[in-house]
Length: 118
Image (cartoon, rainbow, N blue to C red; front, side, top):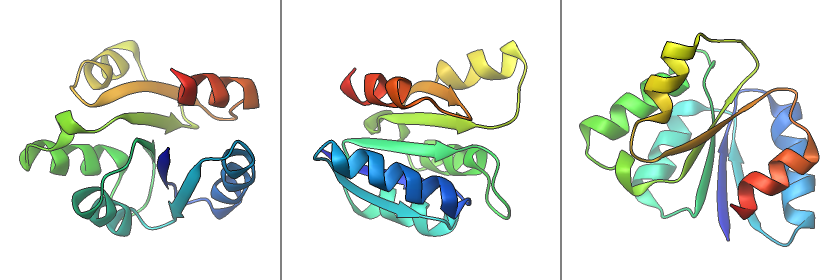
């Protein structure tokens, strides 16, 4: 399985790297959302972890760009958020084709494993 992780916090991507590669998965991370968007557009990933709150280009901006290019539906994206957001926002995001869940930081290892396995 090939996994992409887009998150501006390198400590988080480093931790994910250790955990995910220990499970035997191929893992690539970027701490730059624009770079991550290009990776989604140019490569096929089985799974994408996408932080919602990033500077310059937020996770929401990435989702909107993928929608405009009509490739969001072809993704399997799990949103990551360290900030609470209301149920309307969450429902709206989770109803988009290509969005397959949301994990709230801090993320427990068992939740991460279960999310990947689903």
